[in-house]
Length: 394
Image (cartoon, rainbow, N blue to C red):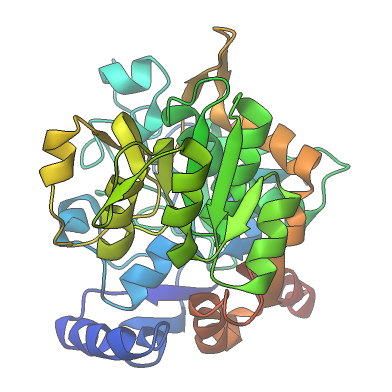
């Protein structure tokens, strides 16, 4: 089977770090990612099955890994060599199409009884990511035993699979996993009815978070910061009331909230900020934009950053992370699986439109460079397309 495999090769990883720091996506050219033939993965245990990816998205955490920019925090919960790809729509042996929920929690790992987080349905907070009958791996796509979506074959546990409705096309289906991240972020942000909410960043995560805020919360005014024209147009279409460039956000929030400014800090500010970028600059701006006792939610994956936390202390700001998905509690008190909410939102907001380009595995270097510069090139989601590979192999 064909797969893009990422191995633990220190010199190539160092080269990727240098190249990716200069030009995002260039780590695919010099780093440890390679297209190769690998043996099919054996089934790890009961409840596991073979699946064959159709489309698999390229996300920010994939790009950070390939460019050697990911935090070393992940080293104990990743196993090598792994096949990347966790945004996956695939075929099963019985002819069904499925979307993968990639977190490798206690059920997939054969651990009983499950940890408290898995027991209450919060898979993203599983406490057993390095244990059980699998090699360490926070998700499929970062685990040596499961494979990943950047291939023609992988294995998955039945608890990870969600059947795709017949009326949903593959572009919509491959967006379900990233949309689930946006739904979780919007609900994690603690938005109350009428709140002023700022979303920094309008890549995939930022855009789906805007859509989720509009669909699942009572947010009053949603301000979206977007660098590029296509991003600004999509943010407005998906529900942002005001869309602007990142440098303009403080002035707009100051006007909307009636705040004053001292230095870079607002006296008041937004009720909530969703940081979908995760850089030193965006985190510092988030803390400057949020009101005292407001909440900043980190949706974009930060690496190693240097940020002044004085305002966090002085203004009693909440700084929270939003990772993955599991079970959500809606304002009505109803508990719903995040993926079920994501399927609904993909359909309601036509989020398959965010899939801008697809590539065969053989063109992985071009695909990754495209994904790394998606906003500048007028794109949002870039994905690998294995459907053509299947046709050639028939």
